[in-house]
Image (cartoon, rainbow, N blue to C red):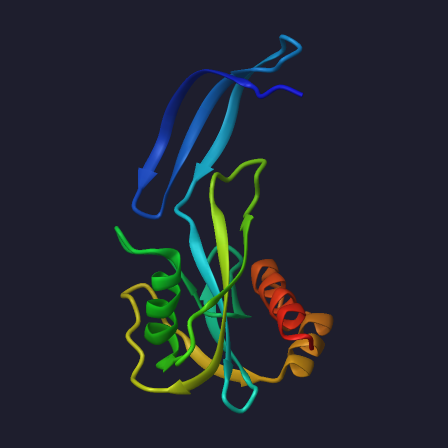
Length: 180
């Protein structure tokens, strides 16, 4: 199998939140796709944070693209020069006020949608989390913190209470890592 050949590229839109690029590409069989749209986003981190009591930290927030309030694991983007593990530590503290005395465990790095998006989500597990500070939300964030057991989360996934696929994958990877 061969990669597609990039003939040309142009941007329809650029912003700090992401870019929309249009590529003209040639397939190995000679067929040319005149307009193949690609969404460019930064990589981001998702955190499964388990408290000393065995509860998982969740955040409830409005997601405009869906027009719904969703329940998810804490997540965020790295700042310039920041490692993904450091971004996970910072975002966990900012969004929840919790920190862990343990180093985060990388659960995996997965493509968000390789057909149209160019980024990855890095999944981290934090254990032994405890409340150590106050939340510090970005200007575009409004979050409510909740906790649940892994069993309660499983029921929320089954019933549609948690529908964000990256949150579901994060929880499932954490369960396997913890042997739950």
